Image 1 (cartoon, protein in one colour):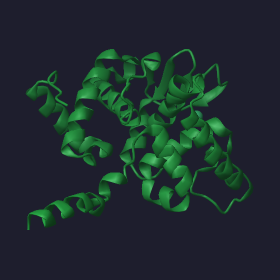
Image 2 (image 1 turned 90 degrees about the vertical axis):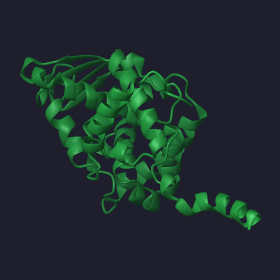
Image 3 (image 1 turned 30 degrees about the vertical axis):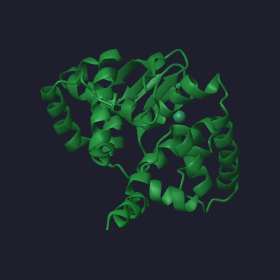
Length: 245
Ligand SMILES: [Zn+2]
């Protein structure tokens, strides 16, 4: 596939930006990096981001980072734009939500609005292995509403089956602490926390909950650990090499 719409200059600019700021991007192969940059530029054009006056001076960073979070969570999908959730409102920090009746860091509403604290958004990506990422959490809610809620896909049911087993385990056994306590709130929050864990600590996730990890990878249509399996790739190459010896 060729991504001809991205000019070399723009590509270089985006590459430099994400290579230093976005851990997910640095882990991608060269080919996938190109795919990511193309998608980011499309998402950036379609998202309608409204920012509070206090953070207007970092609008370029906000647009680039939010577009990247969208591209990350939908990276495995052919239809990667969450158009229904293209309206994003940014606050400098935690904010009061009338809907929730309290101060929150982020909120995803079924009418297509995502509200985020920029401070907490940045914290989520500053530490890419603490399994806390506000953007991925809220986008997981959006992804569920956009892609799985109405259709009730078989892949979602397969995920839910595995998830219920783990949800019951963590709800009754406090010694299992891989998922933070907030995951015990309900299945919707468990899903969102699972997505954070999937991206920020995939190796431990897979080793501790292999069936749920596989179901999550299948649902998100991507697996960060797959590319690391160098020998798996070699298994295709070696017979070819032997053939020509
Ligand atoms: Zn949530």
